[in-house]
Amino acid sequence: MGFADYLQIPLFQRAMLAALIAGGTLSLLGVVIVTLNLTVIRFALMHVGLLGAAIGLGLGTSPLAGALVAIGVGSLLLGPWSDRMKMDTGLAGALFMTGSMALAFLLFYKAGVPAMEAFALFTGNLLALAPEELRFILGLGIVIVLCFAVFYREIQLALYNQDLAESLGLPVAAVRNGLLFLTGLAIGLAIRVVGALLIDALILLPGLSALSVARDLRQALILASLFGIVAAVGGFSISLFFDVPTGPTITLVGVTILGIIAVAKGR
Image (tube, rainbow, N blue to C red; front, side, top):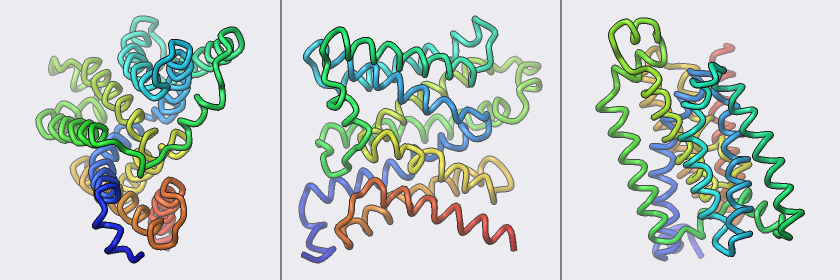
């Protein structure tokens, strides 16, 4: 079966569209993560998702639904909790990470929850997306783009000059916490698309590549979106052509983009 034949099948059409949307929109949040040095946050929310999956299995519901709910709640609490405790957000994320992992393993032991079924979320499968999941990806993508378009100046100040933003009366903490919440939702979706262990392929790598060459935030966002699309759509296409897993292939394309940029800058 040729590549064009695959794209005649609704399953593969849905996967391709999901790769296009996720790559072009979730990658915008990578710029935020890198700029605010919040790389530990993605690990914290992944472990919160593991705890949610364990709770979902313990309650007899979908582990993916439990993971998404836990990640959403965790991303809502992380920013305000770190503000209340007057603690660096990265340090608060580390506490969330270790605490969630400990609770998840206690639940595995005491409730007899099958740990391997919860850890299966960490693999992801772009071809297993249901139509409603594609609609959710599209909805979140639209929300992310609208937030950056409508609140561009507020986000720019919150990322690069928080003192000036506060002196102008801008709610810096609210902007940051809103971005953290969107990041949490994006991580939940990335788990479904490429798996938790490969989240960086859709979120972090495009943002890191863009910030390596961009001269301002606007250019960084545009480049991050382009790099994300190339990684997601290109990786998915290559996986179909060579019959290899989609998640690792998408990740390798993202790594290749970053490597090419690093070599070009070195020269």
